[in-house]
Length: 125
Ligand SMILES: [Zn+2]
Image (cartoon, rainbow, N blue to C red):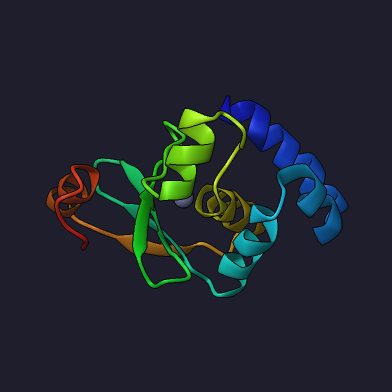
């Protein structure tokens, strides 16, 4: 569950060794750290209190991730997490956790209408 992952992340971040991250989460950890470095994570929040995270991937594609339901639309998440159940996280979700923990997430306010569009996947704000 995400609370378990959060607890693990907090312990790992307290130790703050990139090598330990790599050991715990595999190669996606280093890619996630790159995304953190590039400030690729934006937290969208709407007046009604809904939140979604948008992560700009290495290819420039925008992925909308939801920590609440632990979901990312990227292929890596679909294959490793959903199908083979071999990975805990994809680099995008890990980057969101890292940005949140390090308080470097970009903040963006959107209207409820824009949030609905983001949540239904029809449009980027
Ligand atoms: Zn992903």
